[in-house]
Amino acid sequence: MADMPEIESPDTGRKERVPPGQRAGSRFPVLHYGRTPLISTSEWKFRMSGLVEQERTLDYQEFSSLPMIRVHADIHCVTSWSKLDTHWEGVSTGALKELVAIRPEAGFVMVHAEPNFTTNLPLEDFFAEDALFALKYEGEPITAEHGFPVRLIVPRLYFWKSAKWVNGVEFMASDRPGFWESGGYHMHGDPWTEERYR
Ligand SMILES: Nc1nc2c(c(=O)[nH]1)N[C@H]1C(S)=C(S)[C@@H](COP(=O)(O)O)O[C@H]1N2
Ligand SMILES: [Mo]
Image (cartoon, rainbow, N blue to C red; front, side):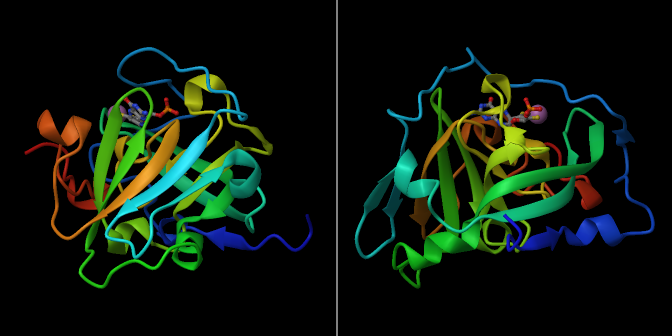
């Protein structure tokens, strides 16, 4: 698609691309808790809930018909590997604002994913211009182990916030820890200030 907007993640413009305590490499490890869920697009659903005027659920057909963007970004896993120059295609997180009316008191989002995974983010980071629900990685559908059919990508935070097998977002007034955050990972997770654990 020639008219797909190309978004440059702001951090790719830094002179020093690798955050403190990280090592950049070409590896793309698979890291998650539990089994790798095998999700068929005919069963996949995406639910928007919490502080919205009206809850809404989209199926894969509807979700994949939304306008797509392409993002060039670096990713940083808290276990210290980074991977520069990754490319993702999918639905901008900002596109959700056209689908549901988010109440003004919402300041955070809980991202829900398989299998029983959650992660919390401030809306400011969630709605960053380079954040998206990715359907493709390097031009190909995301593989099962990397989050098929849809995963969140939030380049400006450590990679655990980028939930694989995402199936919903819940808008919240105040912050609440998700899965790894309950186990001691940082509530925010900025790699540049090493918000790793708490
Ligand atoms: N659903 C789900 N998403 C998840 C996780 C998880 O356990 N479950 N782990 C996170 C962590 S800790 C990391 S580092 C990245 C790893 O993504 P990758 O396997 O594509 O490298 O996924 C994140 N997303
Ligand atoms: Mo991680």
